[in-house]
Length: 165
Image (cartoon, rainbow, N blue to C red):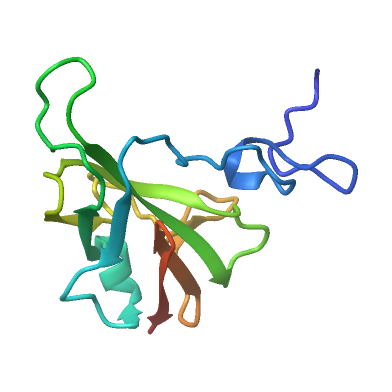
């Protein structure tokens, strides 16, 4: 009970969705719904290569959410309506030592009528002053190095972006 090492070691699987290496019963953000959802990247995706300055400001990623179930998207009644919380996760592929397995960087709740689609834009710097792609060193300096590669994912959709100089 006195070991709070989030990353774990060879004898422990790590803690929280960011570092847990074992198979969870339900993944973080799994959610339950009475409605089927279709989630795809929308039109106008950013370039697959972006400068460190652009990544620091944040990327806007368009997402199309479709209600494929039988419930309407209205919020009338205690259990009526179909709402989906769309979550954007970031995974470091190349460039950081011992990164988290994934990090939640943006989310948006949307109501969608049955058979219809809604469009949302998830921004990696949705909270002012944050930098999803930055790593902070021991001196407290944050940086993004050229060649770092990141995977952004929403549902089963993945998008890879590489930092350039």
